[in-house]
Image (cartoon, rainbow, N blue to C red; front, side, top):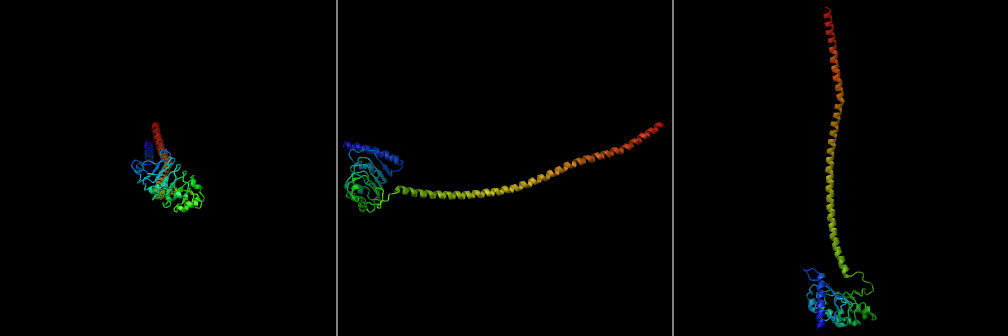
Length: 279
């Protein structure tokens, strides 16, 4: 009992840490990764209550290297799609019966690599679960004659066994990567929509710039008219400056003519004065 209590305490700490890392405080975790977090002294999973609280949301559960030898007490997990239990001590059909009862309706990916399954018959509880991928690498069963053919025949829904299909073609991408690709496609559609909006906005900006250039062109015509007016004014000023010397010459000529006309009168007066003096 003491060992079981210690195990539960260790499991509880591991689950609390994993759920905190997997989710925000406002939602339940969809994935719990407990790999290597607990080395079970009893060979069992934690008390069902520790996992049942996540039953409605949990889609992925991983407990690699936990020294598990039994899955007795695995709680009902109706949303679980991926169960990873590699590097443990699991074996026997009873172990897989527990899996089928707990999450058989939704389970699609099961990793039991490096466990102790030795006979194909032990896998019988998986026959009608709808599994798509099963990993049994490094299990003794992989050494059974015609192992691959027998497992594919047993589990008709199976697409990949130990990373390859029935013809031996290796799996190039996981279901997670396919889901990521779908998300990327949706993101690309959103980006394309944004680019189209950007292009439309750019065309509108170009049109506005062209209209602005046309207005600038009209303003430029007005500037040309102003420049022509300035040139005419400058020409008039130049003509006025050219005419100024002529005006000065005319003024001097007029003054000279006046001065010349006064000289005979002066001489006449001088002559009259001289005649008077002689008398």
